[in-house]
Image (tube, rainbow, N blue to C red):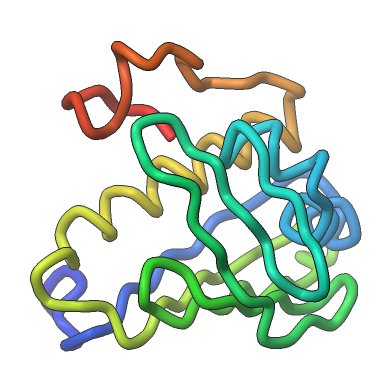
Length: 146
């Protein structure tokens, strides 16, 4: 099996010590998203406006959600689903599946999702923000940052 070999698809799994409800809120709640994903990510009428340092603001439509179980949105031209499952011990196993990923940005997006997921784990499980919050030290300038 090769690494991320499926055309147009990115898949990652991550484990959280936090409950499925906390993980879901980390995706569905604007204040929670701002703790790890974007400087702000406010939602209005089912559309999230992401403000990420180094990028122009962009809008992502929420396609579906089931509290504590699943969150799905459009993101940089792809369809991204977060499947949330109780691990049986009070924590959560989550799988991210990004589909319709443009071939020209798949490598960057594959790495980008690792960055988002690890920052999410740090924020939800440990209350830590791993981001630089510095316009001179962004992803677009070669820094590992969200």
